[in-house]
Length: 292
Image (cartoon, rainbow, N blue to C red):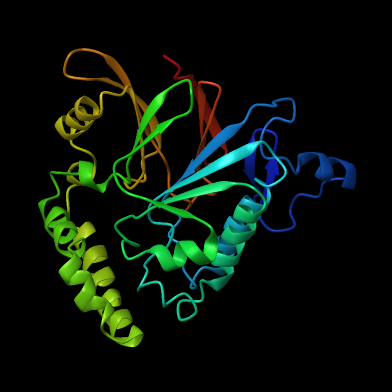
């Protein structure tokens, strides 16, 4: 049974099972906060790898609840760093994939004043401007640079860093080409769906036999990106291995690599406010100062 969650001052709390925890009305009202109510800092939130699918209505509901709890707080920017959806067949497929409620939730967040930035992932690389027009999101390319006044950060989905996974990199090059995308989008939605399901099946089969280490980032690729960007903070998803890694550029300059988690164990996100970053995952959190 999928567990429920509530929003608490420390983040989102997963409950053991639906209905197993009964909070008094006053206490429940007080817990419906997203960040510490004593904080009045403007914050930026980062998420990735939700893999929203019509096959998992609970997860889609949790995402909508997550967005709703951003609205009354001091979150002013939301960055979605790829793989919002399990797969995406083109911007004309939202209704076919039963993803219209997700679009509506994003639009409400945008209308409420949250600037939402969307990066394509390896599952939803066909997201485009029509989706953004309907949701109020702004499409950003990879790599993307964020300067919050305290720290300049490099934002990536993360699969480009997994250079040891040769098969994935070949696939990535193919599906990111404009010619391939044009040909794919010329097919009917039903035809696209059948092809996507075949690719997903082969991908899952392939992951089951690949060594775990080649599906993680390559250290040299990380250093190269930090060097090119001349930054000390990198934030990405994709690997489903949430953590804060201390690393360095090739000249020895200290750097941080923040890895966002997937949502299989509950809402996973990072919050950046006033030079302090907090990574939340599976009911726990870890913070670190990133200002330089």
